[in-house]
Image 1: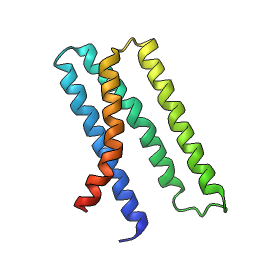
Image 2 (image 1 turned 45 degrees about the horizontal axis):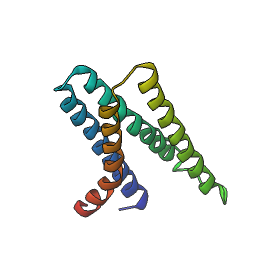
Image 3 (image 1 turned 135 degrees about the horizontal axis):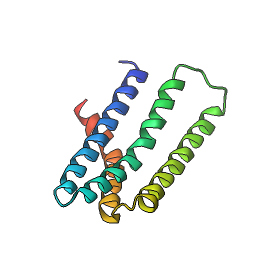
Amino acid sequence: MSLAFYSMRLAKGVLVVQLGTVIVLSLLFTLKSTHYGVSALAGGIAASLPNILFTFLAWRLQGQSPAKGRVAWSFAFGEAMKVIVTIIMLIVALGVYGAAFWPLAISWLSVCVAHVIAPVVINKKG
């Protein structure tokens, strides 16, 4: 199996785990109230959407051969954009839409933890 295919399969698996985490937490918080459920959804999306965008851009640029030294800059730019998009989404969710803090924070943190743990679990299975 080629490294590119393996990396793509791993990235897809991580994104699926993240989206599953968002859905499960949103449904669980919806049992308390709809406002909590939407807040949890906003927190999960604020954590997973920047990762989806970063992965999409990485797949798009995968076939190109970058100039020497540009790989690190591309990665740093992508990570900086992830952080900026996450901060903007959290500000909009909390400030504009008045999301409940704890469901948003718990969902956001859970998706971030899933992002770290999922590759370990997927690699052990594969």
